[in-house]
Length: 121
Image (tube, rainbow, N blue to C red):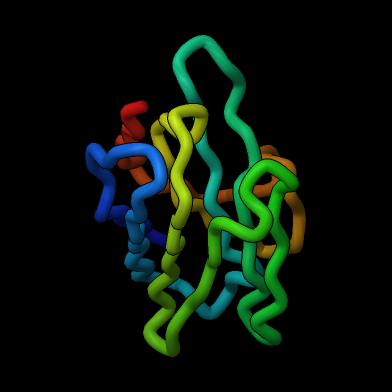
């Protein structure tokens, strides 16, 4: 099994920045992709960004491209640097891990508990 724990959410004004962290533990050697998803009230969970573990290739949704950066370190910690935040970025952000590459939440086997990000206008 793999355990994921997010941290770093909070309240920020529009235009500000936040950095989310995700600590992975357990059988991390089986993982191929780490991703971030978000879910706003009344909306479906949506893909935000993903990073290929072996090669470091990154993928972003159009809504965050150019503002968010996903990265990982050797200890299997994954980060989401969020700049130029907008009120529409307000959501619960989830870290997720998969044994394949996909931007679909159904392909991710392991999930963190989520961290709230609120952007005020």
